[in-house]
Length: 201
Image (tube, rainbow, N blue to C red):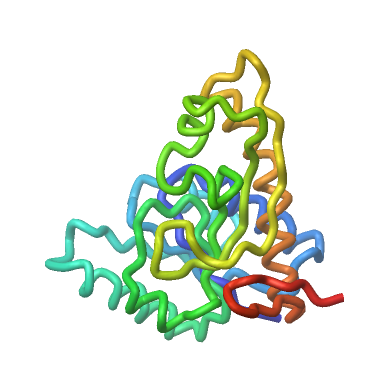
C-alpha cells in the first residue's frame, strides 16, 4: 500500500476520483494528506468528508517560494509519502522540490502533451483549431508539463465546442486516467528509460 499526498488548489474533482477508486479497491494505496495553497479550495471539503487529513499552506504567508515549499516538504516527510499527485494544483514546483521526489510526482494535464502545455490548455487547443484534444498523466520534471508521459486519452473536438464544453468532456477521462496511473505506480509497473515510460505487463 503506497502512501499518497494530493496537492490541490480548486474544486477537487480529480481528488474525488482518486478517493472513489481507493474505496472500490482500484488503487493499492491510501491518501495520507491533502495539501492546498488555497484555504477556500472545495477539494479540502471533499477530503474532510472522507476523513482525510488536510493542511492549508497559503503561499502569501511565506517570505519566499523556498520557505513555502519547505513547509510542504515537512508535511510530506511526516507521512513518509511515496507518491505526490498534483490534482488541479496551480503552482509550479521548484527544481529542488522535484529532485527530492524524482519520478514520484505525477500530474494530470487537460491536453495531449507535448501540445498545449501550461495554463488554459483547452483554450489553446480551440484557438489552434485542432480536431483532437485529450488529457495526459505525466511525471513532473523541472519543466512545465515536460516530464515522461504515463498515460494519454484522446478526446475529439466538436465543431461548436467552447472552452467549457471541451473541458467538461476531457474531465470525464481525467477521472479515469489519473487513478489508473496511480495504480500502475503502486504496482511498480512503470519503468522510465531515457525520459520514456514503459509499462510492465
